[in-house]
Image (cartoon, rainbow, N blue to C red; front, side, top):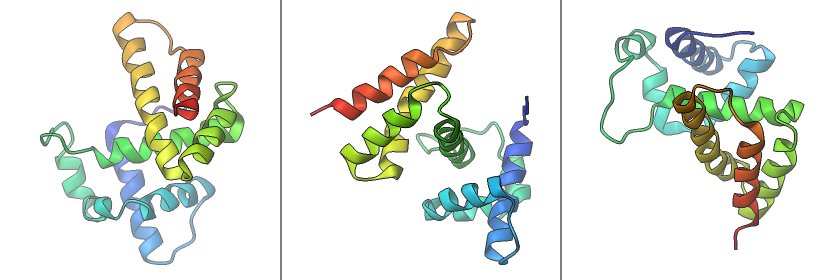
Amino acid sequence: MFNPSQADVRRFFCSVYAKSKAGQPLEAIEKIASLWIDEHHEYHVALSDVDAALQQMGQVEGDKTNPFLHLSMHLSITEQCSIDQPRGIRQAIELLTHRLDSLHDAHHAAMDCLGRMLWESQCAGRPPDGNAYVACVQRHATRD
């Protein structure tokens, strides 16, 4: 299993941004990351300076979203849907996308569920509960 460090994740997204801006060829995972980067113009400044990104690791700036965590969650949800793991996540995201008329907004809603699942797993010291995660996304998809 691939387990990148925070620094690895920051280097990856900064590299993807630089390669994309320069028109360089991208690997498959980089292409997916690039699409999500393009959706988040507000992160371009943070992605343009890898040294600053590495120096800012561990710093919390009020209620600002961590661009590297946020993009990592987009990438995770995209990968989960591509292999339907946990089982049912692909359909739940598709239903949520249809309800919200936006894949991007569906991902943002699913991030709440993904974050909750990971937090609960860490607090309880047990593996993540994929069924609860999918059920949470399904609830978002069926809300009025």
